[in-house]
Length: 232
Image (cartoon, rainbow, N blue to C red; front, side, top):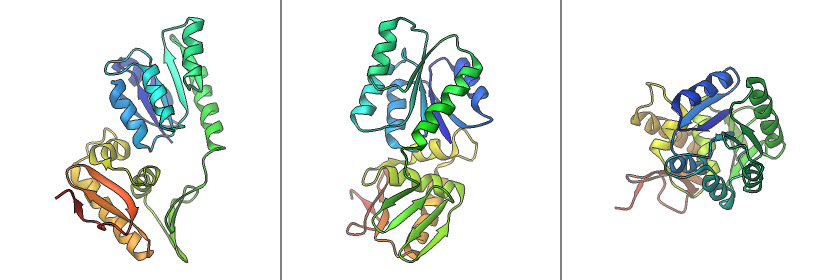
Protein backbone atom coordinates (compact mmCIF):
# COMPACT_ATOMS: atom_id res chain seq x y z
CA UNK A 1 0.00 0.00 0.00
CA UNK A 2 1.13 3.55 -0.77
CA UNK A 3 0.79 6.51 1.59
CA UNK A 4 1.20 10.21 0.76
CA UNK A 5 2.72 12.22 3.62
CA UNK A 6 1.87 15.91 3.15
CA UNK A 7 4.16 17.65 5.62
CA UNK A 8 6.41 20.68 5.02
CA UNK A 9 8.86 19.79 7.80
CA UNK A 10 11.12 17.53 5.75
CA UNK A 11 12.86 16.01 8.75
CA UNK A 12 9.57 15.10 10.40
CA UNK A 13 8.15 13.75 7.14
CA UNK A 14 11.19 11.51 6.73
CA UNK A 15 10.80 10.31 10.33
CA UNK A 16 7.16 9.38 9.67
CA UNK A 17 8.23 7.56 6.51
CA UNK A 18 10.86 5.63 8.49
CA UNK A 19 8.24 4.58 11.05
CA UNK A 20 5.87 3.28 8.37
CA UNK A 21 8.21 2.06 5.66
CA UNK A 22 8.38 -1.55 6.89
CA UNK A 23 4.66 -1.87 6.07
CA UNK A 24 3.88 0.81 3.45
CA UNK A 25 5.44 2.63 0.51
CA UNK A 26 5.49 6.31 1.45
CA UNK A 27 5.88 9.41 -0.73
CA UNK A 28 6.60 12.88 0.65
CA UNK A 29 5.07 16.19 -0.38
CA UNK A 30 5.76 19.53 1.31
CA UNK A 31 3.12 21.69 -0.39
CA UNK A 32 -0.63 21.65 0.19
CA UNK A 33 -1.71 22.49 -3.36
CA UNK A 34 0.63 19.91 -4.83
CA UNK A 35 -0.53 17.31 -2.33
CA UNK A 36 -4.15 17.96 -3.26
CA UNK A 37 -3.36 17.37 -6.91
CA UNK A 38 -1.58 14.11 -6.16
CA UNK A 39 -4.49 12.81 -4.09
CA UNK A 40 -7.02 13.72 -6.77
CA UNK A 41 -4.87 12.00 -9.40
CA UNK A 42 -5.46 8.70 -7.59
CA UNK A 43 -3.20 5.79 -6.75
CA UNK A 44 -2.72 6.42 -3.02
CA UNK A 45 -4.30 4.24 -0.36
CA UNK A 46 -4.18 6.85 2.42
CA UNK A 47 -2.76 10.26 3.33
CA UNK A 48 -1.17 11.83 6.38
CA UNK A 49 -1.95 15.55 6.29
CA UNK A 50 -0.50 18.47 8.23
CA UNK A 51 -2.73 21.53 8.64
CA UNK A 52 -0.17 24.34 8.39
CA UNK A 53 1.22 24.00 4.87
CA UNK A 54 2.59 26.30 2.16
CA UNK A 55 0.55 26.57 -1.02
CA UNK A 56 -2.76 25.56 0.58
CA UNK A 57 -3.68 24.76 4.17
CA UNK A 58 -4.62 21.23 5.17
CA UNK A 59 -8.30 21.89 5.93
CA UNK A 60 -8.79 23.45 2.49
CA UNK A 61 -7.06 20.47 0.88
CA UNK A 62 -9.28 18.05 2.79
CA UNK A 63 -12.51 19.90 1.96
CA UNK A 64 -11.63 20.06 -1.72
CA UNK A 65 -10.80 16.38 -2.15
CA UNK A 66 -13.99 15.41 -0.33
CA UNK A 67 -15.99 17.82 -2.49
CA UNK A 68 -14.59 16.01 -5.53
CA UNK A 69 -15.62 12.62 -4.10
CA UNK A 70 -12.11 11.44 -3.24
CA UNK A 71 -12.73 9.07 -0.33
CA UNK A 72 -9.12 8.16 0.47
CA UNK A 73 -8.55 7.74 4.24
CA UNK A 74 -6.91 10.86 5.71
CA UNK A 75 -5.11 11.16 9.03
CA UNK A 76 -4.59 14.74 10.17
CA UNK A 77 -1.27 15.00 12.00
CA UNK A 78 -0.76 18.47 13.42
CA UNK A 79 0.46 20.57 16.32
CA UNK A 80 -3.01 22.12 16.68
CA UNK A 81 -4.57 20.45 19.69
CA UNK A 82 -7.56 22.63 20.56
CA UNK A 83 -10.99 20.96 20.59
CA UNK A 84 -12.30 23.31 17.92
CA UNK A 85 -9.43 22.34 15.64
CA UNK A 86 -10.17 18.66 16.12
CA UNK A 87 -13.88 19.19 15.44
CA UNK A 88 -13.13 21.21 12.30
CA UNK A 89 -10.75 18.55 10.99
CA UNK A 90 -13.15 15.67 11.57
CA UNK A 91 -16.14 17.56 10.20
CA UNK A 92 -14.12 18.45 7.10
CA UNK A 93 -13.70 14.75 6.32
CA UNK A 94 -10.68 13.46 8.25
CA UNK A 95 -10.80 9.84 9.41
CA UNK A 96 -8.63 10.50 12.46
CA UNK A 97 -6.98 13.46 14.18
CA UNK A 98 -3.60 13.00 15.86
CA UNK A 99 -1.56 15.76 17.52
CA UNK A 100 2.19 16.32 17.65
CA UNK A 101 4.22 15.09 19.39
CA UNK A 102 2.77 11.65 18.68
CA UNK A 103 3.49 8.14 19.84
CA UNK A 104 5.01 5.89 17.19
CA UNK A 105 2.88 2.88 18.11
CA UNK A 106 -0.31 4.94 18.05
CA UNK A 107 0.53 6.23 14.56
CA UNK A 108 1.06 2.69 13.30
CA UNK A 109 -2.19 1.52 14.90
CA UNK A 110 -4.18 4.42 13.45
CA UNK A 111 -2.90 3.80 9.92
CA UNK A 112 -3.71 0.11 10.20
CA UNK A 113 -7.24 0.92 11.41
CA UNK A 114 -8.18 3.50 8.78
CA UNK A 115 -6.76 1.35 5.98
CA UNK A 116 -8.66 -1.70 7.22
CA UNK A 117 -11.84 0.38 7.26
CA UNK A 118 -11.17 1.57 3.72
CA UNK A 119 -10.49 -1.95 2.47
CA UNK A 120 -14.08 -2.85 3.31
CA UNK A 121 -15.27 -0.12 0.93
CA UNK A 122 -12.94 -0.67 -2.05
CA UNK A 123 -14.12 -3.21 -4.66
CA UNK A 124 -11.74 -6.05 -5.39
CA UNK A 125 -12.05 -5.29 -9.10
CA UNK A 126 -11.94 -1.94 -10.88
CA UNK A 127 -13.74 -1.85 -14.22
CA UNK A 128 -13.70 0.34 -17.31
CA UNK A 129 -15.57 -0.67 -20.45
CA UNK A 130 -15.11 -4.41 -20.97
CA UNK A 131 -11.89 -4.71 -18.93
CA UNK A 132 -11.35 -5.26 -15.23
CA UNK A 133 -8.34 -4.85 -12.95
CA UNK A 134 -8.24 -7.47 -10.21
CA UNK A 135 -6.53 -6.08 -7.11
CA UNK A 136 -6.26 -9.51 -5.52
CA UNK A 137 -3.91 -11.07 -8.09
CA UNK A 138 -2.66 -8.10 -10.19
CA UNK A 139 -4.42 -9.35 -13.33
CA UNK A 140 -6.09 -7.46 -16.15
CA UNK A 141 -9.13 -9.14 -17.62
CA UNK A 142 -11.07 -8.75 -20.85
CA UNK A 143 -13.73 -10.70 -22.75
CA UNK A 144 -12.99 -14.35 -22.04
CA UNK A 145 -9.36 -14.00 -20.93
CA UNK A 146 -7.03 -12.34 -18.46
CA UNK A 147 -3.31 -11.69 -18.17
CA UNK A 148 -1.02 -10.94 -15.21
CA UNK A 149 0.55 -7.52 -14.81
CA UNK A 150 3.89 -6.57 -13.32
CA UNK A 151 3.82 -4.33 -10.27
CA UNK A 152 4.53 -1.11 -12.17
CA UNK A 153 2.07 -2.00 -14.93
CA UNK A 154 -0.56 -2.66 -12.28
CA UNK A 155 0.09 0.64 -10.48
CA UNK A 156 -0.14 2.65 -13.70
CA UNK A 157 -3.33 0.88 -14.75
CA UNK A 158 -4.87 1.40 -11.32
CA UNK A 159 -4.19 5.14 -11.48
CA UNK A 160 -5.62 5.43 -14.99
CA UNK A 161 -8.72 3.40 -14.09
CA UNK A 162 -9.28 5.48 -10.96
CA UNK A 163 -9.23 8.57 -13.19
CA UNK A 164 -11.23 7.30 -16.16
CA UNK A 165 -11.59 10.00 -18.79
CA UNK A 166 -9.25 12.40 -16.97
CA UNK A 167 -5.70 13.19 -17.98
CA UNK A 168 -2.97 11.93 -15.64
CA UNK A 169 0.36 13.68 -16.16
CA UNK A 170 3.64 11.86 -16.72
CA UNK A 171 4.99 13.61 -13.64
CA UNK A 172 2.19 12.15 -11.52
CA UNK A 173 2.81 8.64 -12.86
CA UNK A 174 6.54 8.91 -12.23
CA UNK A 175 6.06 10.16 -8.68
CA UNK A 176 3.31 7.66 -7.87
CA UNK A 177 4.95 4.57 -9.40
CA UNK A 178 8.69 5.22 -9.13
CA UNK A 179 8.72 7.66 -6.19
CA UNK A 180 12.15 9.10 -5.41
CA UNK A 181 13.92 6.30 -7.27
CA UNK A 182 16.78 7.22 -9.58
CA UNK A 183 15.01 5.10 -12.19
CA UNK A 184 12.19 7.67 -12.39
CA UNK A 185 12.98 9.08 -15.83
CA UNK A 186 10.39 10.31 -18.30
CA UNK A 187 10.71 7.51 -20.84
CA UNK A 188 9.92 4.91 -18.17
CA UNK A 189 6.28 5.98 -18.25
CA UNK A 190 6.24 5.80 -22.04
CA UNK A 191 7.69 2.28 -22.05
CA UNK A 192 5.14 0.93 -19.57
CA UNK A 193 2.26 2.68 -21.32
CA UNK A 194 3.38 0.88 -24.50
CA UNK A 195 3.33 -2.46 -22.65
CA UNK A 196 -0.18 -1.78 -21.38
CA UNK A 197 -1.47 -0.75 -24.81
CA UNK A 198 -0.30 -4.06 -26.25
CA UNK A 199 -2.03 -5.95 -23.45
CA UNK A 200 -5.27 -4.02 -23.96
CA UNK A 201 -5.10 -4.87 -27.65
CA UNK A 202 -4.48 -8.54 -26.84
CA UNK A 203 -7.53 -8.55 -24.54
CA UNK A 204 -9.67 -6.94 -27.28
CA UNK A 205 -10.48 -4.10 -24.92
CA UNK A 206 -13.02 -1.47 -25.93
CA UNK A 207 -10.99 1.18 -24.09
CA UNK A 208 -7.59 2.66 -24.89
CA UNK A 209 -4.83 4.70 -23.30
CA UNK A 210 -4.78 7.99 -25.17
CA UNK A 211 -1.84 10.40 -25.15
CA UNK A 212 -2.78 14.04 -24.58
CA UNK A 213 0.17 15.88 -26.07
CA UNK A 214 2.36 17.65 -23.50
CA UNK A 215 -0.15 16.76 -20.76
CA UNK A 216 -0.16 13.03 -20.07
CA UNK A 217 -2.44 10.03 -20.55
CA UNK A 218 -6.10 9.15 -20.09
CA UNK A 219 -8.12 5.96 -20.31
CA UNK A 220 -11.21 6.27 -22.48
CA UNK A 221 -13.48 4.45 -24.93
CA UNK A 222 -12.06 3.48 -28.29
CA UNK A 223 -14.41 5.91 -29.98
CA UNK A 224 -11.61 8.48 -29.63
CA UNK A 225 -8.10 8.46 -31.14
CA UNK A 226 -6.54 5.31 -29.68
CA UNK A 227 -2.98 5.84 -28.55
CA UNK A 228 -2.56 9.01 -30.60
CA UNK A 229 -1.72 12.51 -29.56
CA UNK A 230 -4.51 15.02 -29.09
CA UNK A 231 -4.51 18.77 -29.28
CA UNK A 232 -2.68 19.14 -32.55
